[in-house]
Image (cartoon, rainbow over all chains, first blue to last red; front, side, top):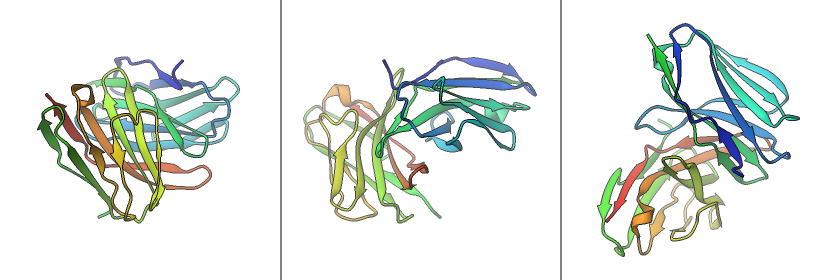
Length: 110
Length: 114
């Protein structure tokens, strides 16, 4: 079983719609959760981090964490073509181990 | 400008020819890592370093070596590269506390081993 699992997609949404990206993880002791965005041919960049159950909002992005279900999600409201990228879920398990999912490719259609 | 640099950006080599990929950061971060990214497998950690002279294995360390003699530099060494090490490699540095672990990635090195 992989540490972090994501649906690889591709996920296509029309411009202006809400994009919903999901991630599950296996280590119940995980404390920190991250969403990275990676444009084609570029390196990943952090867009959201979340540590407590519930929602965390930052502009058009909302991260949701449910530790009981071992589930973390990212919502992108008012999706724009510039949001088209691969989104990587990362989970910190233990002091030194950061595990990444394989990523979900999002395409926002104008 | 705060950044992580890697060199070379692209490298084609042959099996068995030793190579080094350099990584340098100017953010005074203690923690640095190397990852490889392969289709369908995502980002996998090769080695990490918590400070100067402190390194440890990640998920896929076989065939790789690292060193951390200075805080800013963390080179990745392939003593005898093989074709299964063909991949996209990323170096990253981070500031860490109990929760925060924001990885700042370098631009990547695309390695092909023939």
